[in-house]
Length: 97
Image (cartoon, rainbow, N blue to C red; front, top):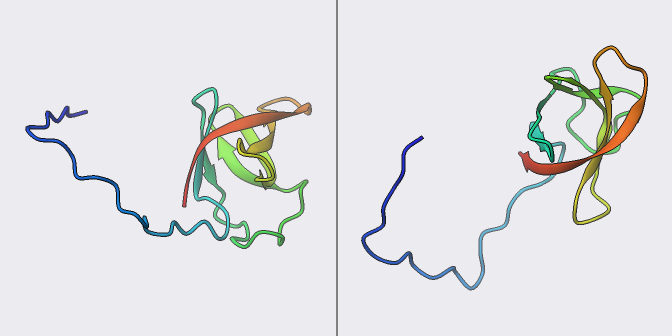
């Protein structure tokens, strides 16, 4: 990681920032515990096309099932730890499209 030291202030934020495209599923997620998850290559990229019981993301310690729930400001997903059948809701810290 490189550290950058500013010699002057950054410019102000634009009055109308660019629109961020969030259609489809994120290609990767970071859970609130720092776990990285990536979309499985054979899953649909358009919301509504995937069964909530289908694995969508592979994480280092388990699997996320179904699409992320975007109904609240903090998105959540259904997680199952590797070797377990118990599903729990986990918070999503960030998403990359």
